[in-house]
Structure formats: structure tokens, C-alpha cells
Length: 229
Image 1 (cartoon, rainbow, N blue to C red):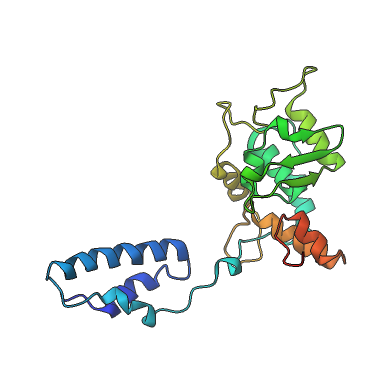
Image 2 (cartoon, one colour):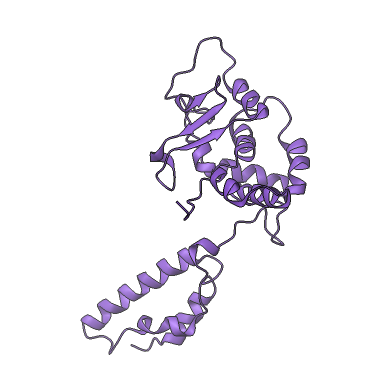
């Protein structure tokens, strides 16, 4: 009953802007505990009901920015860290992520049944897309060559087989890609932060903008929903 809104605010402020989702979950858990105390007569109110008035406004979900590598630095990074054969596993998945501007989760979950090498097309099913819409990704020559390196056999791969399996033959974890970037000390547009795999989507968007490509076209390439029907 001695805990005050200011004390909760001071504790939450340490992570309120740095990790908003974790901070929000922590606040909710504290509120639940204090609500139980109030219901059982141990307090005369819930300090978490007003703690938000003592904390800065969190950014909206769409405003949060992943550390991204400046697009001018991407070719050099690929040459130094993603060009040494054999290109398999996490290194291949990271390069494919860069080449397709896809979300890393879409790449890590990609199966051979989604790939049409003849048409040079990757069809990501709606069930694996954030917007729940099928996404068609045209594949560049480099992306096609990378795919062929993943399955050098004459017979066709099983449709359900992952394209970028881990050493155990299962799908890669997100940390597998992150580990490569951390070991390389991959530069980003945020001082003191290493570039993330997701940040390469921002690198692509900035490259497209600087090179004068249509904004809606690059948004479609990123599988973003465009409001204009």
C-alpha cells in the first residue's frame, strides 16, 4: 500500500522507449498484481491506473525503426561477408533477404514449393504474409543463382523442404541471421546499434527513393498495403 505511481513510473521509464512492447507487458502485469491487492483490501486504489500520465508517449507501432544499413554500404558488406563459398544456411538466407527485400521470417520459412525457377518467381502464400495476402517476388539473376546453390542435385527438391535449413535440417531461427550481422559489426543508421536483417527493407526503400523509383511500386515490392485501391 506504500507503492506510488511515481515509483512505478521510475521503474518503467528505464525501458519505456527502448523496448516499448516489453514495457507495456510489464506495466500490464504490475497493474494486474495491484488490482488483486486492491480487490483484497490491501490498497485503496491501483497506482498503475494513472502511471501513464508520468511517462512519455510511446511511438506508434508503425513509427518504430529497425537499425538499417545505409544502402550505399550494402554492396561492400555483401562482398566482404556474404560472398565466400559455400553460400548455405544462415549466410545464404541473409543474402536472399537482401536480394528480395523480404522479411526475414518469410525467407526463413520459404520452401521449394513456393519457387518457380523457370518463371523466376517466388510466390509467398498468404498464410505466411503479415498482410495475409499472397506476395509475388520476381527473382533477379543473383537470387536465382543463390537458389540453385541450395539444391545442386538433378532431381527436383521436395516441395515442403525448407530452402535454407539449419545444420539440423530444420528452419533457421531469427538469431542465426542476427549473429552474422553482430559478428560483422554491420553498420547502421543508428549510432551504437548493429544493422538488423529487417533493416535491409529500409535500405531497399531508401535506395528506391534516391534512385527515383515510384513510391507505390517500392511499397508493393515490400508487400505493404497501399490505401489507394
